Image: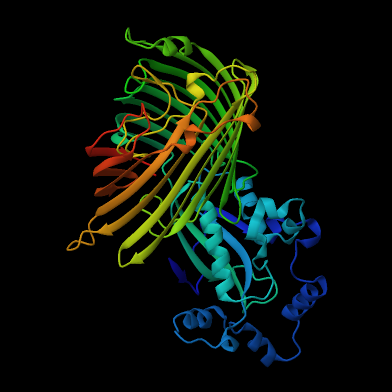
Length: 528
């Protein structure tokens, strides 16, 4: 909410970020020394009493006129008055360190920040806004204040932010032009606890979540959860997250996870996993997200069914994984759940072999594009692919293999039922691809409903490459024999959860793939 006040607010405890807070000693004062001395002389001695009276008259500030111009639909740029940023004042963040907020504010008020090594990488566009004392307009000051408010919001320490412009409390040189940006912040609750039930990725869960915000006064958070589910029998997660260098674009995360999953829908066993993971995440100015992560985990299988195949009994052995991964992601979708316009790209490259029992190089990529073609109607195309090569000449562990098929990817096939099998057990693979095309349309008489009409076509396949075969000699013959399906149905979106009820049939079925006809119900967060 934007407002302006021509009177000074009562003294309040807050954080004042001006050039003096962050600039070097040589730049502390924005007023040249001779001007300061002349001002002092003029204030003490006046030869003409009339001039003394005129000096005491209040100076008409440019801010009211600038605010009036904001309300006009047609604007003459020659009429826009000059304003200068004097200081950024922050009020309400009682539990946040002053030094931390000074670092967040620094690129907006310190000209030397733009000269630092890797300044573009750390600050992005933040150093492009007018610095304190520089002549500018109300439009650029609003843009700067909006960007700074967005930085604070991304820190997850503010519940509400009110931004106001006021004449400078302590003008340095240009009394009629200098303004202060005042941010009155309602802090977010430091402690958070909730219980919930949810559905997603073809399972239902009940969970307890707790979170502590702004743990040490620098936007750190500690979050924990305990989950019970139909497939994830139990999962415990403890995660610590903090910004790096007080940068809203750069975050570090350390997490510990323990979970027990029921995999009997596609293999005759349960899986247990205990994992430590650390990650460094960076959001580039153009909207691309990067993540560099390290993972150490212990995996094991248990509750192996008496009907389990020989392959599952051979592959279901405990293992230790030590891996480093890099992820790049770019999302321009208008809605990440039911996308009407935009594109999405994500690619993951993982290397395992920094100790542990498993050694491989794996890459997985997915992409999609969507657009509208009529009122409320849209089309979408999606593609996924993955390839893994072992580096120790051994067959990959079952935990590390790709799985494919089900109501969220290749529809009208059972969950993870594509590719190699033995008895009723899916053995997974180390190479796959899948593609899909979808059409969305509103209910003819109820276009505002979250219920939509949906039509789809999917195809894809998964294969297993024998170990000790160089990647250049891989034969992808099985991948050229995809299974495919078409169908139509209803789609319902509730928050991030998507529900589909489809009627379809498989068009192409590779031998052994678990196809199904008729109705299929799908619940998940991501669909192909």
